[in-house]
Image (cartoon, rainbow, N blue to C red; front, side):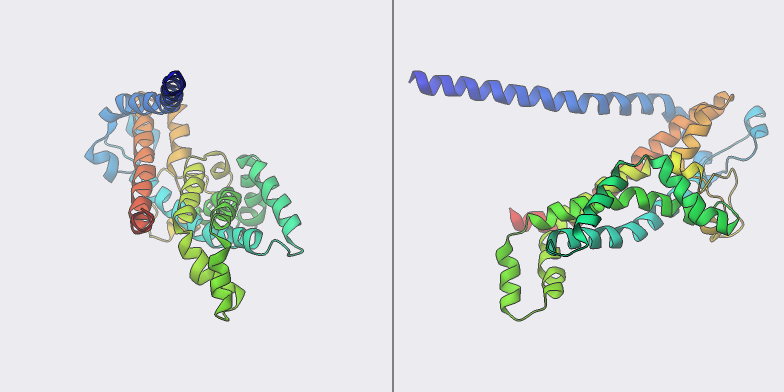
Length: 289
């Protein structure tokens, strides 16, 4: 009886420590979100989502201003970054997980770890030399490439972990049917690891969506809507992280409130992305349960 009672006490102590640890992790996030909403909610308006920022004279004259061009630019730049990074990141993760005996793997692993540790601003400088200087202009596509470089090592590492969690017997079953190795990976292993792959993409997206430093050297920013839709791709493009920074250091009080509102919209984009990903993995989670 004493032994059973002692184990129950130890169990309750450990559960209590886990609860305290969970609260310690969530509390800073809650404080940040509450503070951002308090500071920026008053700046959210119809004009905020329909008007462009324009020149500083608008703020001085208290004319309607907004960040519609920034919100659209963020969606375009981040979407292009995902389109670029996901195939290459998942491909690198497949190489690391499914072909460990390949001669390129040691070099690939070292380069992936090194790329993951390089500061984001250096990745922006790399894309500046690679794309911006040859094009002769800043552009949304350059910003997308910079963010994709931020995403690549994270997607590759999480893909490797997700694929390694799939039992080897699934691969053996496909190989026993006479399927080539690449077909087994694509048709059986990848679908089985869908939840882990999407989680990895989300982690990479969450890391890149808040990066402002690499965008300073690539997409640069713009206070106005472009004349046509491809202006978001081939011309200087505004994004929420970069605009949030510039609004925060501006001398105009109205722009300070818009900066907090931009942070709310950035929160919203991340939350909506996670909800969509949760919906996409719903069938997989129900099947596992």
